[in-house]
Image (cartoon, rainbow, N blue to C red; front, side):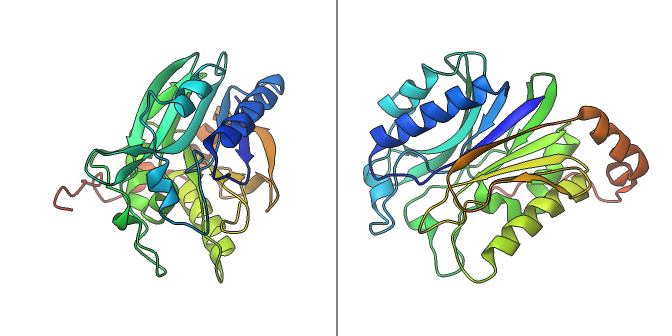
Amino acid sequence: MRVALGQFIVSAQWEENLAIASGMIAQARSGGAKLLVLPEGILARDPADPDHVLRTAQKLDGPFVSGLLAVTQDITVAFCVNVPDGAGRFHNTLVVMRDGAILTCYRKLHLYDAFAMQESRLIAPGHDLPPVLDIGGVRIGFMTCYDVRFPEIARHLALSGAEAIVVPAAWLRGPGKERHWEIMLAARALENTCYVLGAGECGPQNIGNSMVIDPLGVVVVAQGARPGLIMTTLDQSHVQEVRRILPVLENRRFAAPVLRDDL
């Protein structure tokens, strides 16, 4: 299956971001992609005003998501937006859509209360494990940004049949952070013998560095720090062959992870 990853600098104005994302959808479709992954938090962002993401949050039937629904014919698109929770915070919500319909949503489980950041001040955590969907005959799982540091989610997805895992992100800059990003994506791919597709927001605050990792932990394609769109093909036969020669899912001695509900 042909896939695309798009990264751009998210504006403070949702209308500008809608136009950019719509253009990337058209570009990915024209390149034959059946799946496009866009970054986390693409509705609106202002690095100088952390609370901007809360003030600009929209419901799923708001104009931003509705605008993208209108241009998703013949292509599945995954991205994250801020959706009000009705109690003064918002849910960081991963949305998957196709042909004018929302296929599924996932509320980010792990909030980035680390490296002097505190996402929980503005964001309410989700309480459900992410789904696995059949997209173009390929089983795709989903997680969001900081989730990638927690191998239990990826293992859950792999045991649920995922052949690839999608990771929209807004990975903050900092010492060694580009290396953390690549290591985490590669680890999740290698330990679960699946593809991992990480799409990162780029610009002054976040690193970009969108990339696709294969089931042996090899970087197949990467974008770097500049805005743009990259494409590659997911090969299910490669997943099957890797799982034959490296049967870590069969050889494991631990049961499937269980989600804590006390947080």
